[in-house]
Length: 277
Figure 1 (tube, rainbow, N blue to C red):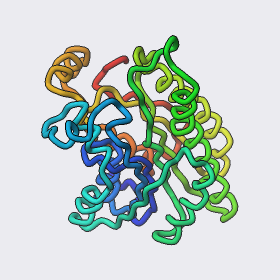
Figure 2 (cartoon, rainbow, N blue to C red):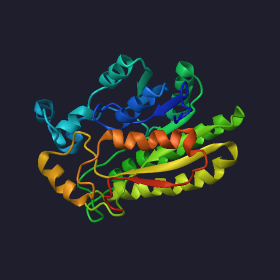
Figure 3 (cartoon, helix red, strand yellow):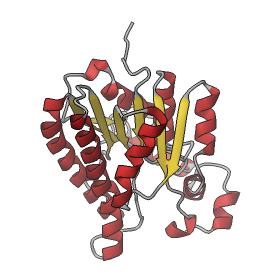
Figure 4 (cartoon, helix red, strand yellow):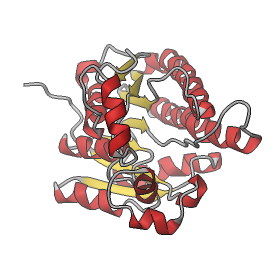
C-alpha cells in the first residue's frame, strides 16, 4: 500500500473558491489524505470579464458566464464539501496582488493549523482577449502581480519560515499551463512561464533545506468555463479523447506532495491526456 505521508500536514492552497475548479479539487484530494487545508480566494465580478451579473447568475451549465459566476462566490461550498467528508479546512479572502498581505497570510494559517508544510500556488489571473498589440500596462501588471510575483513571494515566505524553524521537510507545487504560446491571452502565458523560471531557481535554493519545488502544467480542464462546443473541439486535440477533470490535476499535485516524490524537484509535469505533449 502506498502511503503519501501527508496526514496531519498543513496545506495552503491559493485560489480555491470555485467548487468546479482545480484549487477546490486539490483541496478535496488533500482532505481525503487527512491533511489540514487552508484556502485563499478572491471574488471577482463577472463584469471584469465582460459578463453581466445577471447573465452570470442565470447560467446553469458550463460556459464562460457560469465559470465567472462560480469565481465570484465565496468559498463556503468548498468548505462545506470538505467538512462533510470529515476534513479540517479554513479559508480567507485576499488579493494576492497586495504583496504586503502575504506574511500575514502565513501568520493566519499558523494560528489555525500550524506551520505550512505544503504550498500549492493555484490562484491565477487570466484576461481574454489580450494580445501584444492591444495589451496595456494595467493588464500586464495585474497578470504578473498574481501569476508571477505572488508565487515568488509565497515561496520566499514559506522558505524563510521553514529555514528559521530548522524544518527538514517541505513541498511547493506551482500550477502553470501546458501551452507555449497563448494566442488571445499572451500576457497570461508570459506570466506563467516567468513563474516557471522562478520555480526552478527556488528548487535549487530550497533543496538543501529539504524542500522540493515542482510544477504541474494542466491541459484543458473543465472548471465550469467550457461549453459543449468547446469541449467537443478540445477533445479532438487530446489523444485520450476526453477533457480533463480537476481531480486529474489534484492527483498530480498530491503526488508531488507525497513521500513518493521525495527525490523529484525542479520538474514540470504535463497533465493533459497527451495535449501539447
